[in-house]
Each structure stands twice: as C-alpha cells, then as structure tokens.
Length: 640
Image (cartoon, rainbow, N blue to C red; front, top):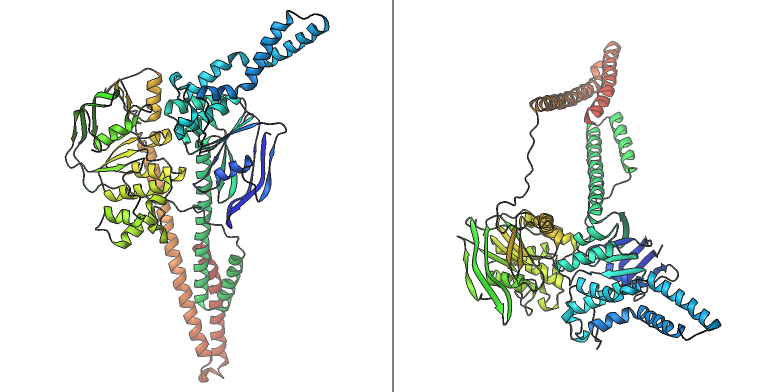
C-alpha cells in the first residue's frame, strides 16, 4: 500500500462534495479517479496533497513515500530555462556524479585507512548511482522533454515566457524525471498533442511507481490504468480494470438495478390491481384476502430507481434540409502565416453522411483549415466548393462565436429571434441552464458552460454540415458520450478536429491526417488509422483501404420455423389464460349477484314460515359461497 484514503468527507458552504470516500493505491498500481464535472475529483487530489483539509477521515501515505503532483493550473514565473529546470529535477543524481568524480581524483592520492574509506564510499555511491540509472540522466532529460513535445531549440527558453500549456508540460516533465513513488496527475493530457499523449501512455504504463490520474481522456485511461475509482454523489466505488471494463460493469450494474426496479414496480402495480379487484367483489372473504395482500405489500423492501445523479445534457442534431451528395470539395488549398507554411496544394472531398476526423500534430493548421472552410479566414490560394443545399453549423473551441456581453438567454435569442421565450428556456434547460441561470453573462461562464451554450446554438441551427473544433473540450465523460450518441444518430455530414481518441473511435467513418507534406486519407475510425499508420500503409484517397464490413448471417430455415412455432404456442397460451380470467370474473359476478338475490328472498315475509324453502335457499347460498371461494383462488392464480 502506497496510499490509503479512509472515510474522506468534505463540504464547501454547507454543500457536501465528498462523503465517506474510501480506496487504496498499491505500490506500482495505475488508477484513475472519474466522475462528472463538480463531483469532487480535483478536491480529492488537493486533500491527498494536503492543500485542503478533509472535514473528516484521513489520508495515509506509506512511511517515507514520495509523491509528485501535477495540478490543472500551473503559473510558474521561474527565470530558469526549461533545461535548467530539468537539471534541478536531477539535482541529487548530478551531485552524486560530481562526488564520484571527486573520489576518483582523490583515490589516486590517498593511502592507508583514508584510501580504504574512500574506496568504500566510491563503491557505495557507484552502486546507488547505477541503480538510479545515473549514467543516463542526460538522455532521460532529452527523452522526456522531446516526448512531451519540446524541440531541442526550445530547451533554452525561459519558463516565465512560456504559455500556460507549455508551463504545464514543463511541470509534468519535472515530475516524470524526479520519479516519485506516487505520481498524481490532474488532466495531464489537456495540453498535449496525440504523439505526446501516446508517449506519456507508454511512459506511465512502464513506470515503476504508482500513478493516480484524474482525466476525461477515456482512450488514455484505457491504455494506462488497471483500476477505476468513481466518485458519484460524493461516494466512491472501486472497479478493477481499465475505463472500458468500468463502463461495461457500470452499465451492467445500472441495467440490473433498473430491471430489478421495473420488475418490482410491475409486481406492485399488479398486486394493487388485485387488491382493488378483490375489494370490488365486496365479500367478507375477498376483503380479508385483499387486506392480507395489503399487509404483504407494505412489508416489501422497495428497490430505488437508478437515476443519473446529475442532470444529463440532452442534445438532438437534426438537419432541416438534405444536402446534395457532394458536400465539400477543396482544390489546391494553400495557407501560410509569414514564413511559416501550414499546408499547400491540399485536395479534399467530403460526401453526405460522412463523419470525418481531421488529425495532425499541433501547428499543422487543423483549426486554420476549419476556419477557412467556414469563411472565417482567407486562403492564400486554392478553391473551396460547397455542394447543393449545404448549410453549415460551426463549433469554435475558443468560443469566439459567443458574445461575452450577452446573457445566455440573449445569446440564443439574438441568434434565433423567431424562437419563443418558452422554446429558448426549454432548449437551455436541455443543456442544464435553468431558472435565473439563463440570465448569467457569457463572460462569467466556465469553459464547459460556454461549450454547452455553443452546443445549444449548434443544435438549433438545424445545419446539415457540422464543422466542430475540439467539441469535447471541457465536457465531462457523461456529456461526451451524449454528444457521441447525437453525432452517431445525425443524418447530416460532420467534419471535426479532436484530440479525444475515444470520441474519434466512436464517431469517425474516415480520418484525414494533415501534415506539412499534405493530407492522407484513412477509411475507418481511429484504431484503424493507427493500425494502418503503424504498419506503414499510406493510401491517400485510395479505395484500396476499405472499412471492414460485418456480414449478416441469416438464421437457418429450420431454426426460423421452430422459433415461429414456439411463438405461436406461447401466444395461444396467453390468449387462453386471458379468456379463462375473463370467464372466471364473469362467473364470480354471476354467483355474487345470485347470492344477493337469495339473501333478499330469504328476507321476504312469505318465506318466513316456509322452512323447506328457507333450507333450499340456504343450501344454494352455501354451495355458491364454496364455489366463490374456489373461483377467488383460481382468479388470483390466473392474475399472477
């Protein structure tokens, strides 16, 4: 055990965020903390690192264990260069190497006990130095920095001049080089391109220490972690396996819980109907039976309905009109900024119904290309042709399409002035903006909230060609899955840029890989693209790379006939049961009416002294009562 969180609870302003959170991290284990936005994941990391104090519970580290923590926001104003910061991370190893060199020089001059002592120190230091991989510290620094996307020309850049994302990569590089017993990472992939993320996956998977990650990058979690700690409604649930295994188990749990709930609800409704019917017979015995069932029903332990613990965003993408088959054609497109050439002579065609993922390293011009297609930027040369009846809906990762001065309500109202206030409120409620929140100013919103406003505008556009720039940024996993479903059910055409490989895998039908040398076409999802690229199969716009197609296997005639026969037999049984139930109810009603008439006859004055007639009526009444008792039992059995 390297870390134990025991009964951790934390509240802010009276609102409970974490409630009795428990989990263990063992030595060398790779684990993830997941949950919706606001679930308390970052709060939990800050409690582990001591930045926050828990209201109750405790955090226990293995004695002498070290940890490194990467937070989401890094604001380092160091005057050191990137490389100097890495030298500081290897300070102990560098100082040890210097001592070894000094001992090597002094050994040649020493004699007697001093020499023996120096030799012992030298042996001890060199052994520890070798175990610490000391001879490779320079290559480790270069390898980590390059792996996380820095070029050697950037090594001498002062840290205080870097962007926020670059500072985060420097901080991550330092942690990886220190090699603590436990690495704590809060959204480590946010500022990395795909190549750097893949490098980090390999590094962490092979890392000797333990790793605890908060991330919305499901593909990354699939590759790295073997344990998932879910924070849901303040509580923690631990699942063994990677993210996909967790998702399967979680779905199975919810499905089982929902099935249990629905079955119980069906049984409760049935019992209530039986009780109502028994009471309607208005007989002492049937009323007693009804009361007995009511007692049984009151003792049932009710199953709670599984509900989403937070409201779910609801998004439906529907094109207003159908476009032509040819949606977009790009011919010989070129774009540069000064001396920096992004791309030249690009040729791309996109057809109706395709979902195309645009990939490429940072700086290759993916966002620029989307802006040119959407007429926000001009190309240096080349042509763009839109197909017949093409209507574009654009999602901008920087949210420049939103007016920070507007309220959320006004942002929708200005864009779609024909919408009624009720319709606007209903749409905003679908994106989790309710009550007075709709009058919150755009400029005060978080990145995730702005993303939801942009998605609301996108949904209302009813466009048939969606151009999306990093649509999953700032969305939690649940919201990403909802967006995936919306795109998969969309009947229009989609072109997007995304670093979310899980999202690409779930939605893309084609991958375009953009580089300074041009663009390469892969007809498949992200996994297919990766397989082909690693195998060295490059076929630009070639039909030789085909998406695998599963062949439908039809059932054999004999099995179909058997299934048909079974279904007919079952349907016949159901009809017979329904008919028997109806006949039983009719017979109960007839006998009850007959007994009411018998009671009335027995009270008639003319029969008061007619013993034989009264005996005859009493016998009939008793026979009917016995028959009714049997019919009640039969009715209950058929009702079940």
